[in-house]
Length: 128
Image 1 (spheres, rainbow, N blue to C red):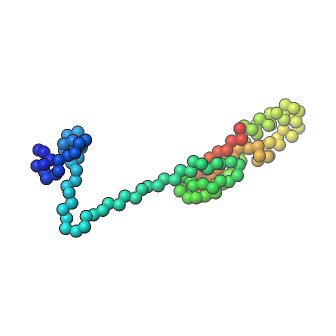
Image 2: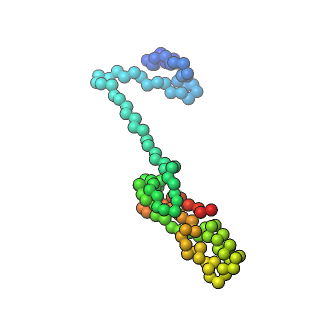
């Protein structure tokens, strides 16, 4: 059966016959009595914050889980720089407790950023 037998206009180049190759026939032309319906397609916007620089201070960003604009909550964790300074202080003779100072200084630790709403881990700032 041909497209012209069904009341459809002939297919243009690049279209296959109905039932052949999985292509569907084009919809029939609108012949209703009222105005022609219009289809409004609204674009879907996805915001991904790629340029946000997470450092050792709270950062303003959009949480990918709860989709809220938040200022991140930070937590300090022992990282490679802390252990490296500890080892250097231990080697130069600060073994009576002074070598433990890097574990008390936030400036030596890595920083984890969390969403304050849903506690999702946003980023990790590593000193080394």
